[in-house]
Image (cartoon, rainbow, N blue to C red; front, side):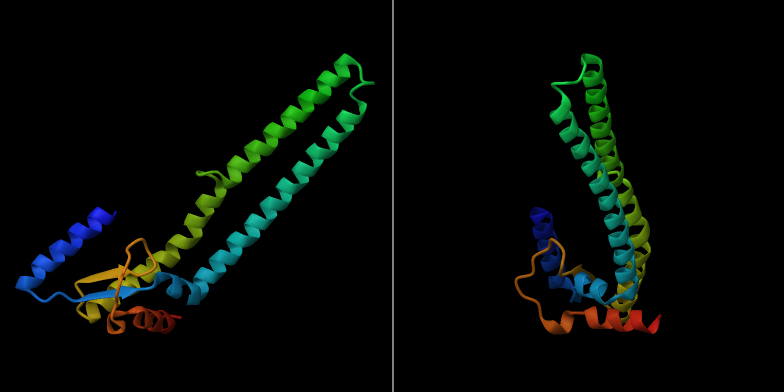
Length: 171
């Protein structure tokens, strides 16, 4: 990523010999923190996470209760009953693990729901950034809150306020 940035900056520097480039930047974290649509999407995600965590907590408690009971009684259980209880505990562990993967795994429901809820918000912000960049005749717009490190930025190149202004106009 740093090599790509370096190459990009060298290219920009080389091009600037022939023509004056205009560069702007935004702080997408600031924009998203002030955008009601993003807050609504995050609130819905938080509610979903809380619901799933509560379900997991209940399953964990159920497993712990069964396990504690098993530990107390295993010496007086018949071999058949002990084997059945162990199978139940293993099945419950597998159920918990499967639930955790289905909800919170890399391809789980949380990831899909986050994409579903945030994609329209991100598209809206991106389109407004594009509009502002075209209005201000900018050649490049960088995101200050991303991986690209800015050692210095002149405030007059920050188009975040203009993007926020446009987003409020669309309400």
